[in-house]
Image (cartoon, rainbow, N blue to C red; front, side, top):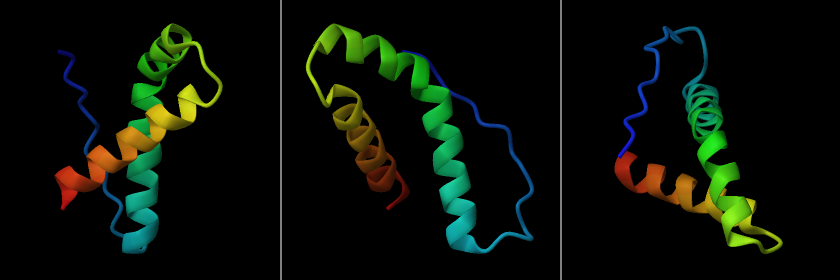
Amino acid sequence: MKVIKLKNKSLTSIKPKEKDEKILLEIIAKFKPLINKYKKKLEYDGAEEDLLLWLLKTITKLKG
């Protein structure tokens, strides 16, 4: 299991929604190599979107 560490960045000047969006984009960028790996293994159209959707749902549940 890989542990992904995000740099703690000061985003106090950004609105909360924009801050969440920026953090989500950073997480997606960190997971992009892993998503690409499994996209190739799954070998079907839409695999990348399904993996991204799963990642976003999981983050939402953890944030909850």
